[in-house]
Image 1: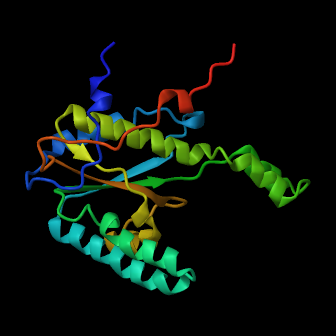
Image 2: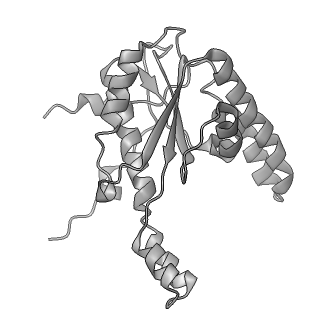
Length: 211
């Protein structure tokens, strides 16, 4: 069985200034929409940005929000760690394409139990841990990334910048009832010819067979 397309996926943070044809973008997003989703809700929406000035401005929005949040972190160690993270949260700056993935409403048994009020909120919310609504978005993102590498492009799954979700959505003028920015990825031709990924945990550490 040929699985090379999976192992060729890496997190790409530097890109060539090569444009991505709109038809290629459409094919990649189409692949993303063929991901499985609970109840077939398909509670995703993709916003594609190709204007370099807008992408740079979004990176600036993230940086500004980052500085606003710093005073709210009490621990100096955690503050230092968060301070250094901004360079990773803005690596999409310079990519020819930025894809924003929005998550829409998804009701679970937890919502029903909480709404009916016969169970405490704490007990009811315990049933929300699997969070299928956001799992749908994750499945779509994985499809997107695998389609991109199959077509010769690179991506980088990002959720860090979503602390500026409200400001980003306001800037681009996107609003869809009940939807929020859940993840984003740059898209383009990788600048490096050879790509690597951090080592994976041994299979024995993460796999259990029960007979």
